Image 1 (cartoon, rainbow, N blue to C red):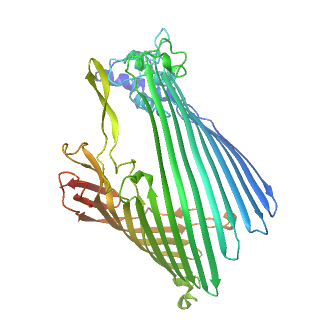
Image 2: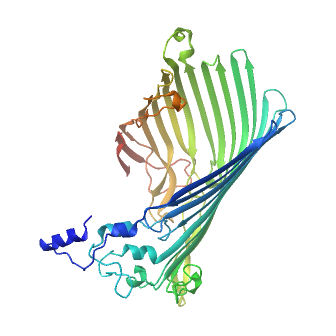
Length: 541
C-alpha cells in the first residue's frame, strides 16, 4: 500500500497520478486498537434429588475497524429433579441470548466496502474539505471516502434467541423407560439502517437520505415421545426403542426501504416521512412460511460380550412440504455392525493396542424440497398490466404441479476401521464409503406452452460418489502437568478420492405429463474430484 511519499515519487517518474496535497494513511484513519472483555458468572448447587446450574456470560468485542463491534449477553438455567426413588426424572433447560452489533451497511454488519476504499484511496487526498465536509470525488466510478461511509451511516441489529427444553422420564418397571421430550426455539431480530444527506448515496446517487427497517422471527418446536426397553442376560445386551416425533417450523419476515427525506435527524426511526415509498419507487416486503414434519421411528440394538454389536433402525416420516404429492411419506432404514477385534482372545496379550474395531453400515436419509406445495398448482402476483387507464397486478401461475414429487434419498454404505495405539497416543480411522443420491430434486426447465410455468421441480437425477477417508491423531507431547491432554495433535484433513463416473436416468419428454406415474426425465451428471479439487458438469438431454 503506497504512502503519500511513494505516490509522489511515482508522479515524479511520470506516472499520471494526481497529487491532492495531503498525507493520509487511510488504513490508520479507519482502524483502531480494539477493546475486548468477557465476563462469566456460574452458580450451582442442590442435593441428591434436585440440582441446578445457572450461568451468565457477557462478551463485548470491538473490531479492528471503527464502528465494528459485537455484544452478546447469554443466560442459562438447568434444573434436574427426581422423585419416587428415582423412577420419575424431570429436566428443564432454558437458554437466552441477546445480541447487538452496529451496522454500517444495509443488511450487513460491517460494510467491507470501507476496507476496500481504504486500500485504493489516493494517499495524497484529504479526509475533509476546508469547510469541514467530507472530501469526495463522485465523478470516479465506485470511489468513496471510507471514513464518510462509516460516519455518515448509522445502524444496529438486535436479536434475541431463546430456547426452552425439557424432558420427563418414567421407569414403571425394571428395564423400561418412557420418555417425553419437548423444546421450542425462537429467534427474533430487529434491524435498522440509515444514511445521512452527507453520505455518498446522496452526493453521487441523489438519494437525499436513505433508511431501511426489517424484522425476522423464526420459531421451531419439537415434541418427541419414546419408550425403550433394555435387557442384559450374561454377555447378551439388548435394547428396543419405539417413538413418535412432531416438529413445526414458522418463519416471518418484514423489510422495507425509503429515501428522499425532509430531514435525516430521525435516522431510521421515522421511515414513513420519506417520499420514495409514496412515489412507488421504494420496495416493501413481507413473508410468512410454515411447515411441519411428523415421524414414527424404531431402533433395536444388540451386543455380545461387548465384542459383537448390531444396530438397526427405521424412520417413517412425512413433511407438509410434500402436501399434494402422492407419496408424502418416506421410509429411511439403517443397519450397522461392529466387531471389537482387540477384545478377542488372540489379541489379549498384544501390547500397545488400545482399540481395534471393524465396522460396516448402510443407511438412508431423506431431504424434502425447499419450497412447499409443489405438488399442487399455485398462483402468485407477478408484474402489472394496464386496464382502463389503471395498473392492475397480474395473478399468474408460479409453479407447475408435480404430484409425483417425493423425498430425495441418500443411500450410504460405509466400511471402516477405528484404531487407538500406545495409550491413545496414536488414534484415528479409515473409511471406505459409497454415497448414492436417488431422486435428486432439481428445477427442470420445460417449454411454455404446454406448461404454464418455465420450470418444474422434479426428482430427476441420481448422483454417486465413492471415496476413502483417513484420519490420524498423534499426541506428540504429553505431560502429567497437562492432566493427560495432548499439547499438539497432528490431524491431517481427510483425503477423499472420487472416481469419474456418468450416471443416466430415464428418457426425457418435452413436458411433465401428470398422468404418467414416473419421472420422465434424463439427467447426465459427470463428476471428477481429487484432493478437494473438483470439476462438475450437468447436461440435460
